Length: 317
Length: 271
Image 1 (cartoon, each protein chain N blue to C red):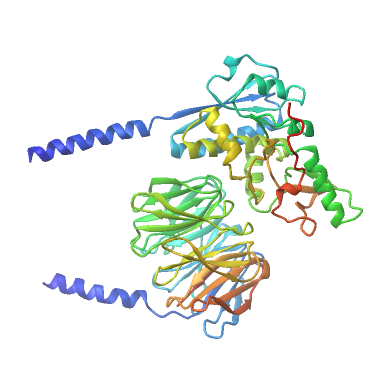
Image 2 (tube, one colour):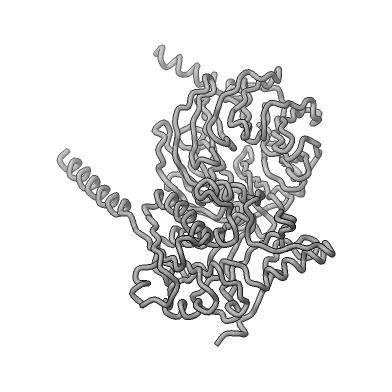
């Protein structure tokens, strides 16, 4: 009885925790100018620019939103920042050339080490390396299922999605995909993942129970080099950063058919979605800007100048 | 209870049998014709190490044997998935004829006549003379008076994933990657990509896939495939005084994605 009560209380507390309102800020890594732009989520203006490490690329928040993590690729480190005070809390070594990472619901960070053909797992509380998993060449995208049981690491030069089991940290499947797989995203129930392939210009839908590709869409625009991928809040729509097509491509998540193409800046690379789903933000690398998209109208409502070669983006909301 | 145990045992045995099949490593043999001192061979070794890294996940193992240039007896090609050839233009057609149905990658000969000959089993990874000439002409149209040469690769190439490939080749070989070593690397890599996708290393299947379905990432930012002539479509680099000046197709002169703006040819020289 008491146990059930505690369990019930814990369940009630969970949504409150996961919806804790953050600073509302949008953080953007600028690979070319070694800086992080801090955008005010209300005014959509840059309020501060942080200089915290060399070649910043991957960026993410802790599950409780209290810590911001930035992969400083050339420093081979993760820099931990307080998203409120914007002070650097600590820095820890994160293997060779940390590029992209994802934060597990348990707080651990799963990193792709591009130069080393491996993924590494760190506890950001103390900087300890928990695991090292050999994967294919040029590991890039990292995605974690919401229940934390599966991690996908894409290897760009081995053309695979490596499916890693947690907590065992062994590979349970290697799914061959189109050339240069970049990014992946899970649905909330973890049964489906979507992945992009940059060189083959494809978006794939993968059944994560069978580890099988169930749908493929080749983006017709030859200039499209699909990079980041994001689901809408209702999971009915998929947003893909189109790279050199200078657009965010909007697909039907069920059929993968293209519903809209939203022109943004040049060489669109990273994507982030507001918690309520009303906005999508893209980093437009060659335009040195971030585009704010209204998802109701599929239109850019504001272009925000940031640093050079904006790469990663995360929203603390 | 008893029935359940029997079913469990049957499932366990079936599972073990399936595991046994899945874990049997397939060996894929490649044949390099040339010298172990060739820079193209260094590139092929790099490709081999990358193919074997992928092979770990698929229970495939790649090996390469080396033979000196010459026309070889048919048994030399037995069990070979693909041939990598650093031979001159005179020898290549005869070599291809002696290995009918086996993909022969041309890593060295740039002669246009080999492209217009459209030899069914020859795949030219190295760019043709016409491609190199067109790349230079496009560049000069955009930059009159510029003295440039065209190249398949350069050791300083950083864009796309050029940086990554150059870094790992230099670490493994102590050399800067050049056109020949890139071609050697690319030939092995596209073979392993094909075998992985087909789960079949028979030369006929590999050749058919390479010619008709290949979408290769040669780490130059574009999807590569073979023309009917057997020539690999690829972007080229323009080099001025040893440094990379640009890429072809040259923007503003040609569509950057129109790889056939570089030295496309028909099969008029086919015999």
